[in-house]
Amino acid sequence: MRFCITMIPSYKLWNDVGLMVSWFESDDVVQRVIILFILACLFGYTTNIFLSETITYTQMIAFYLTARLFTAAALVWGALLVPMVRATLYGNTIAIIIPSAIWIGSIYVEEPNKLALIWVAIFLDLALPSLLVMSMRGLPLIPKKWSEGLTKLFEFYPALNIEHKTERMGAFVSLVFGYSVVALLYQNTAEFGINAFLGKALLGLIQAYCFNTIYFDIDGSGHELHAIRRKVWSSFLWVNAHLLFVLGFTIAGAGLSKLVLAHDCQDTNVENLYITYEEKSFEAVEDALRWFYCGGLAAALLSMAGISLSHLHKDIYTQKISKKYRLAYRFAVCIVWLCLPAARDHLNSLHLISITTGMTISVVALEIYGTSCKGDDMFGAKKSCPYICDAELQKRESDGISLETAVDPEKNAEHPKGEYTLKDIYVDVQ
Image 1 (cartoon, rainbow, N blue to C red):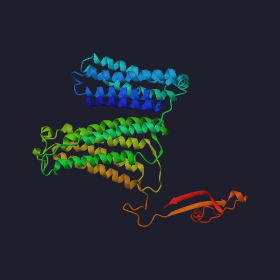
Image 2: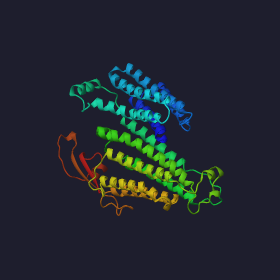
Image 3: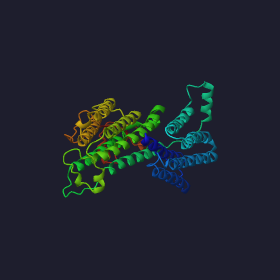
């Protein structure tokens, strides 16, 4: 709960920066100063997380609200300069002010009542922008006259640079992957440091690399239509699934960094660790740590399945395994991961990491095999790659005659000043 309370506002500030830059990408000094100020507030917010339950909660929320209200002021400024999209910018400003008032109220309330205000504020931070987008398209549950009025009010709104949005989101995901890898680092003191500690760390590295491959190379390519361009529901799913992914993979990475230092299996002599890491090492893996690690990975993979589901990928009829069956396998893997903590002491830290990494590799292997075409060799081509080309050629316009024929286009390409020119080409690579 504490992790979600501190992580979600950080994610929200990052989204604010991405949205503002996407709406008004002027790339001038003023915009860069605005971004730097918000990032400085995010930095101050992060430095007050550790003791937020006791001492630094007020300072932490103060930095968060400063960034949010500064964003609201920037939106009001933009509304005054661009009257055509004034309604949209004012609506986003209200969507910032309402939860900000609740955040301020949480400062003056003691536990456990404070948690109620915090979760209400987080819900409004996430829900109000979505409600505003729905209002632009017309709300179905209100009278038709009101719905038409809202649609007319939000007739014009800032264009969203989808490419920039995906790049910003990809950059944030890259930071999460990078954090999970850096957290695995430890210092060895043994003369021969190839042991179970190193093995668990390398398995964690492979796991992060596989997730990176799934996100960028498998789910992030081959789009017929991006989720934001596809439908309203797919856009909402894409945005919210990223939040779940970030939360899940971050907490799984934190749990993995602790499992790497555990000396509950063979070839894990705690004296081989530097004193700083030796103090952090432990023999018995707690059940809570198992649930954090396995549950976080399951949430991350489930959210990646949601991201893939939101996109409309190119439908290649010769694929070996269709997309729905590949996603079904991901759901099955998530269920297995959620069941692993129930084994308790029957699985030590090395077993736990090995099983999850092996199943992650199996997901990547299935995607690579499933997206290949029937008849393709997975380990090199059996023969050179040929192609079939259907082309229509015609006489040069200078002749005034259109004589279509079926001569070989390769021969004509060898003689650019030949008698015929290419008209229409259809290439089918086999």
